[in-house]
Amino acid sequence: MPYIAVTALSHVGLIREHNEDSLVAGPWTLCGTVTENPQTLLFPLGTPLVVAVADGLGGQPAGEVASALVVRQLASLGPSLDDEAAVSDALDMCNHAVYSAARDHPELLTMGTTVAGTVVLTESLLVFNVGDSKVFDAAHDGLRQVSVDDSPPLRPGQRTTSAVTQTLGGSHTFNAITPHVTARALSVDDRYLVCTDGLTDPVPDDELDGLLRAHDDGRAAFEMWKAAIAAGGPDNITFALVRLAE
Image (tube, rainbow, N blue to C red):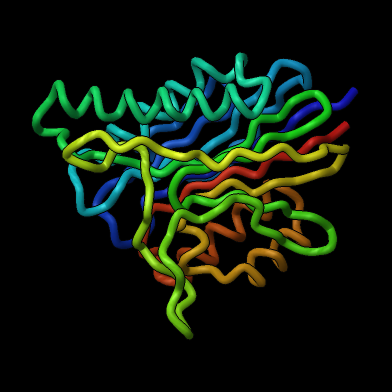
């Protein structure tokens, strides 16, 4: 009987004072905290299962509040996310919720967050994002990004950028979003990596690919975290490996 294995980790890194990342896996959320070891959760295949990360905007107030609000809303809406339109509508609701919370509490003004994730359905998988958190297809023939970065074009020789062109919240006045949502076929042993840029900025894609090829989920998660820390751990590190198994 097929099932979904989700292996997740969230860590503050070596530079930041606190963790502004949040994560959702089904009804389970992890907000602004630290996991010392990868945690693996198993879910039955059937009811839509949302797995996502949210990265609170640095340099603006209460990023951890915005990211937590979004993943908790996605946890609540998760079982209803059965097609692309439902996911897009849910992200619009999250955007409105962030702006509403900031409007009601002046100390939260301009708080915002990115979000990226997957919804596992019985025979397919939905990929979504707003901002520059990422989703990768960790296929046997190589790691491929399947999310769409909301970032300005990179200059020659530039590998990463912290600039984003759309987020949930993040402005003094309301800005509508255009979520990226796509559907993909799903089969047993497919594996996806959902992550904030605290993993992908310091660790190149080819190094992540090598670690995912070499190790199973729990060990791969640990080794990817170690690689980000060895590269200086410049940001919060949050990610989940999503695998369809039987």
